[in-house]
Image (tube, rainbow, N blue to C red; front, side):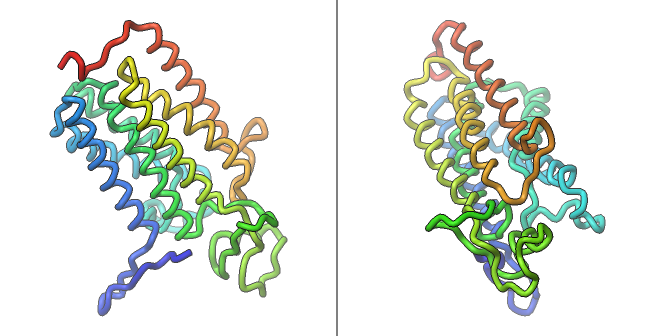
Length: 272
């Protein structure tokens, strides 16, 4: 892990790896969405305007859900917005981003499902890069294991502190116990999802199918990875918050898929 990439000489400003990866994720996602929108004969200007609403809603939602889930991490007003060092929930980002998108759509209507399909592969890229940022920052770590690819985090990191609080690691330890690299599992799942979405995109028969497929695939991969996390506990029905949301997202994705399948085949790009 490498939580601090560099420090600006003379200014004392630390550049956090998590923040850099999130910036790369947002930039890459915007470029991919604009490229895809252009190919799908959508207004590229709408993509850039929508991106602002998506980004703002996503940042607020990601941090808000984390604070709700972990209020013990808030010690001052600054902690409420301290998201550049980690401490974000991806599902909060999705819900916040969706809220921002709907607000923009309400103000300036656009072809919603075609645009959603254009955004879907970009979200998979965001998942991958964002989780690499989590690994570099040391957050979202896994449970203790003895697998050959298990990783140990150094003193002072989230995993080290969490294991001391759990009473399974002595305070004098220089490294955490070996844990699942759940961040890398999630990053790999993002790559696989991206490959599937890109392969299905030209084969889709109706607008919205790619986004529905993303919802289904992400929830199916997130649930088992979440069961290997070492920093989350059950909140309802023996499942973590993200696992409960995954179940809801899976059901919603399946409902969308069934509804879309009942419509006549047709795509925006074919009629534009």
